[in-house]
Image 1 (cartoon, rainbow, N blue to C red):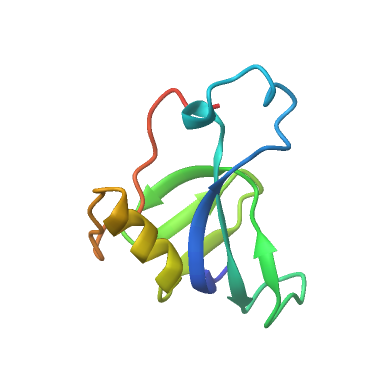
Image 2: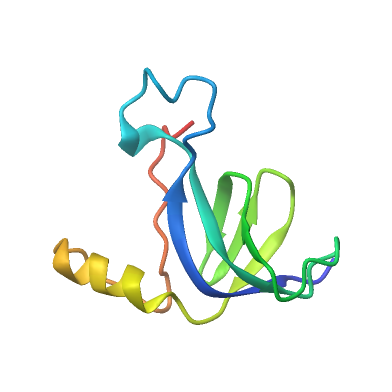
Length: 102
């Protein structure tokens, strides 16, 4: 299966996790949200929120559903939030998944 391109993307935490009310926000599963192109379910041009991120290899992200996403350009508001939060953005490895996240 070819990678699905996701544009105007950002990361978000999974508040739909069954234990979300009892877990610290930083350990909730990380997901992608953005506009997809080339999605096998025909969601082209739609804004989606993925299942939890399982692995990250540079700009390729695999989610729990098995879909592989190729990161396009990130959301500018998300980049501003990173900057204001004192976090750095590495375009070659833009997402870090913390071991131990559910």
